[in-house]
Image (cartoon, rainbow, N blue to C red):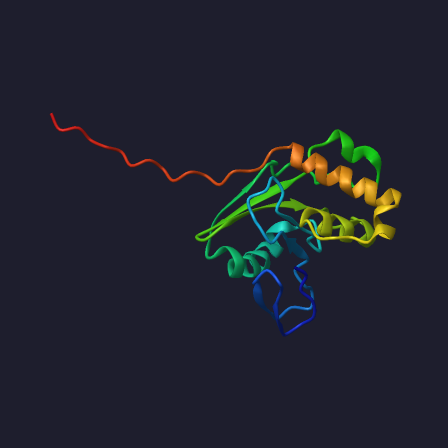
Length: 171
């Protein structure tokens, strides 16, 4: 799913609806069937993820239901991996688990400074969308596949289980 343009409502083939009122679209793609180690990817416009999070949540709520939890596999002091060089191989990929009332999704977070050609491939590969043979026969495709495979190897972020109800014994 990719959204674009100001003041537009979009519905993608996966049932995601979003009304957009900003000049910067939410750059997000999701698998049709959720529940994978990586269900899709999000490519924020800046490294200030917190400022873009409300837009992401707004878009995802159409697919996941009301968002009730967000988990990440990195600390606030940790920078996103630089995908512009091979140094990404030495770092784990950043994943975000978004839990809604109806469904959950594990997203690969693509650093904002990633070149558009690589980010576009990452979005599509993470979402399990088809690519042409011409795209698949390139070094950039192989890099994108390696990055998504590395993210899948990090393990999925699991939605937190509901807290068990405490039972008191009367005695």
